[in-house]
Image (cartoon, rainbow, N blue to C red; front, side, top):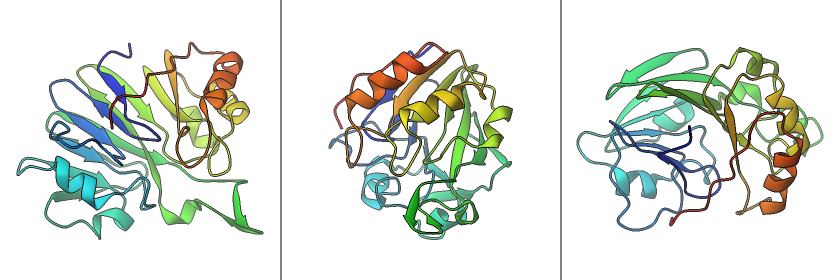
Length: 212
């Protein structure tokens, strides 16, 4: 179920198949495989990296992101999505879903990822498999609508769900296997992923960190 899904650290993944799809590429290794499709969840620096996007891009590359990202993109074809919208690029169907905080505060009354900012998660349909990348989010009611084969969920807390909250999210989504992310850089450690693995009611696969 998780074959050809590569964790590149933090929230970054590469999906290999009939198309090569990157999600939130950041701090990638020189010489990384070129992208057919790049998905960016929101405009924070550790998710939206123009330098990494440029290094992956060829004339056939398309980027999908919220308006806050696509307004800043230069030199690559860009498609803007909002939550609930779908685009099909290079044979890959991508549906944008909400991603936001409810109780992770920058300061009193101001969350790190407000719903109004338009941050996204994505459901990617590639070669008959549905992969959900939750983006930077808490456990939110919209997750009850998510149906996927593989779910990629943040577990580190501070800016996103804690391991315990991610386990609660697993009771809302329908998935066959869950991969923890958003740890090991900036915030969170492998201990968060291990704690989540012990709490989640869905099978968990902690992917090895591949060369970035």
